Amino acid sequence: MKKYFIYASMFLLSLGFVSCNNEDEIDTSHSIFGSDGTEAEEPNEFDKWLLENYVYTYNIQVKYRLDDNETDVEYDLVPADYEKAFALAKIVKFVWMEAYDEVWGIETTRTYVPKLIQMIGNVAYTESGMILGQAEQGMKVTLFKINDLDLNNLDVNTLNEYYFKTMHHEFTHILNQRKPYDTNYDRITESSYVGSDWYQIYDDQALQMGFISPYAMDRGSEDFAEMLSIFVTNSADTWESFLETAEPDPNSPYYNPDVNGRAILEQKFDIVYKYMKDSWGVDLYELRDVVQRRQGEINTLFN
Image (cartoon, rainbow, N blue to C red; front, side, top):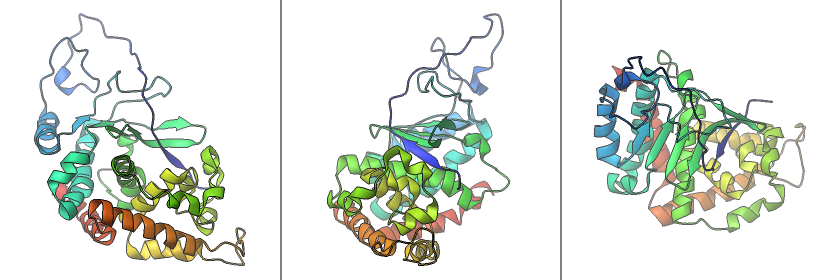
């Protein structure tokens, strides 16, 4: 069974740290920890870039220093590496926000994006698996595992699994909060959702049951977000391979003659497509083309 990753919506608690000796001199302009609020930090190159590209452009605040007001005492977390956080901020803007800019205009993107992105160096673990992203009330998204970013090998599949799909998934929740999707979607496979037990499901098993991923089997809203995020972050050929795997196969250990996973996925996608087209004026095929093109151009950001 492959490793599973989850996205969670929750209110974060506080995490305290032991302070340094007051007599020590601290370079707060490059500190990986947040300010204690008693003095302003001198902006570094990344801070200035964020001000221009996130704050002024999208009204988004990005926190990459470990802030005890933005993290959860339940998890053992470490700060995001400065260089890797800087690189990922460039990539996320290019592949996610600017992709939406192309299909519906920057004003709409600016209106609906979360107002805070928190970057964490490692992952948070639960009994169900690793948490790669958290969304809170449509206002904040937390990205984990920043320190695993390999700046010498920016592999798109890895970036999709750890970061891009997370952003599209969480943004789908934000859009759903503003304009709810058709509740008939949840009824298509209503009896097959397994809640927090989704991590026990294999990829092929989920597909043959009509779910695009094991995590989609958590509940209807997660199913919907997984359908959209996985569609736009994968090529047409890869998407077709998912549908082919979902087709009834008598030789598969998950075969059920009464279930046609491909037909179910196509029925679900029709609702997802119609929702984005009618509610937001977004053609998902166009959005996928833009995302795929930008994913192929990531290295140009660092040349």
